Image (cartoon, rainbow, N blue to C red; front, top):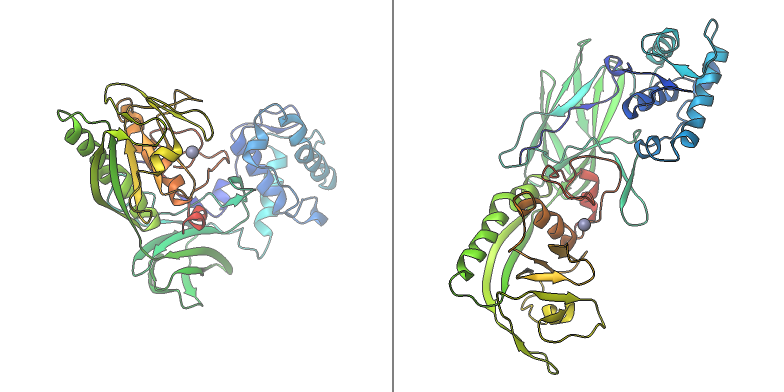
Length: 411
Ligand SMILES: [Zn+2]
């Protein structure tokens, strides 16, 4: 389940090249479009640039609206070509032709704002566990109504730091030159800066800003310092089959300790601990009690829908919770009525989740529980077009990263 974090580049000049054409009639690959946008945004209006005025998101560059969404960028390219002498005004930028060379030259001469040095900042190395994400986020996510649904490429990068814990960032520059670092507030301190390695220590929970200085520029890294969030989980197995009860519980506990727990520990300082297990073989509500047959499907219906033999509602499961300060995980042959393909579910901010452990496939065994448990802890979806995130709506085995911004959803 390893996932390699990309290095975080604070737009160095080596990055400012495109693989294919951008603009009117161009190929318009996402990375190339964003590179041209970065260049134009880093050039003053007086020189034909857009000075931060272009705001395309990666998701604008795919889908049926793309030609409409690309129009402001094409206009900006035409304007740049018109204001700069000697350029063909075709609204298109081709790899290593005159327009991009001119853009790069003007971008490099811009001063201030921390966007024009070669500095690359990255985590110093993996932390033990199936996820080496470290909470170091290139995402710069923005939250919409409830989901983390957009990317702000101009926002500072973020780094998660546990209270009492240490992280080392490595700042490297092709051009060389000294790097210094400072934190003005009390919640974290810079322990050392040596050969571009910046070691910081978390002191108090909250937000702090790390300033990294290099070649006359200030690069800010937002720090999220978090206390340990202890989270005990209890398992309730629905249906009694003495030949398999213990192995089913043990299987799920191993998923929790082997995959789910390290993802959260490394990136969010959530510490899971295994609490009490029990087997429940009766639903004992007043109107229609029944004994749960462990080999028969248990249909889960919505609130207000009729319940009966082997048809249960959320309320039936909630009635089985003994301690709401802990996370209760129901395992059983559960089938969601309104979407029979669902194999597990966690409610945002609820203290419980259920999983059909009899049909969780190998790819889902770790990440689906980790995702659904994320909801129970308060995490909303990340719907911005970003691979690798645990809270992506579409659950895939490589989704393990909890971007630092989203830690704000945790209690
Ligand atoms: Zn979800």
